[in-house]
Amino acid sequence: MNITLTEKHIKNKLVASIAFDGNLVLSECNRAKEQLQSTIQKYKAFQISLEKAESIDLSFVQLLISFFETIVHDKKEIKMLKILNPNIKNILETTGFINQIEKYTES
Image (tube, rainbow, N blue to C red; front, side, top):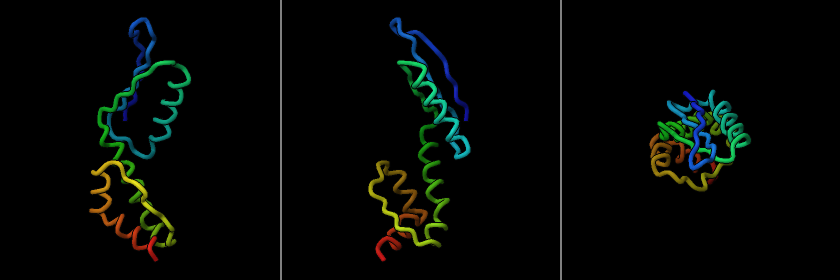
């Protein structure tokens, strides 16, 4: 993933513009978080651009699915309270993640 930070003046105000381009993979989450924190601390105004916003959702889904074996093995109690994005819910249902989680939280 590429993170580009630029400065520009909009209506006589210095504005930071952060662009995330490419797939957000788990190994880069901290770098993205640190860049955002740094920008928020340094600038009073900023804009965020996500060139592939769907990749962030997919990374979240990949994170959940990566814990599937641990959840099943350790019989963790997990509830999916709310899934805002219907596409994420569909992917989790298709992979069987939600059904398996519900099975373990009901028993």
